[in-house]
Image (tube, rainbow, N blue to C red; front, side, top):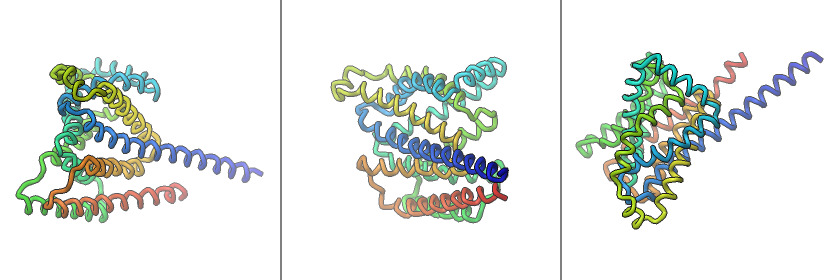
Length: 315
């Protein structure tokens, strides 16, 4: 009878864990798809420039972020972080650096689709996981598996092929693949890897967002795009929801599975690039083939680790 009771409890715990895992997967996939929607929304917000879009995105997203703090029950954590900033003012300088870095990446994300550079930025996002692997190896002394080593090799071959065939590499791809990894390294170094610090970073970007937003003649823009304010509201809502489900996914899923599912975002961005009419340059096909092989290898490596982890827990 005792054995049955323990068996029933164990089965119940497994069911609860599976339910949370399913929710986490839904949150993660939803976040990737919504980030792709934001990528596409840049094109329906024309004729606004990338700088104007950055300014307005921050202005329309920030109010929803404060609502989100309450919905995910992080408002007390946010207030505690504000107190921490008062006691450790040097963190404000750190946040100024990270907010500037994030602002550049947000600008690039919005600027690329309206300037026919969506594919180039998507390439950078495809390279980003490999950059993270290299940072983990050389900065944090993490071990690289053979599969990851092959992934890095394929990516290197692809980048070199692009440089050899065209004589250069896309600056948009370089900025995209290096920006967020450096951003996360700084946040990890100062132990500010939480949603509250992100909200503060958005607040610190308010001056530049007001400046860019004020440079736009919205009356003229409205004559060119009569639904501009509606689309701006959609941008704010979608941006906040995307961040919300992303945070929920990070809190629900094991890190290996969360990292594995994050590869869906650059694939979504690449798909959006084709949907808005962009096409690969002839000298970029080998690069893209190598990058997709590299990502597939990383996915296989991550899948193997996720598959092995339950077996380790049972033992």
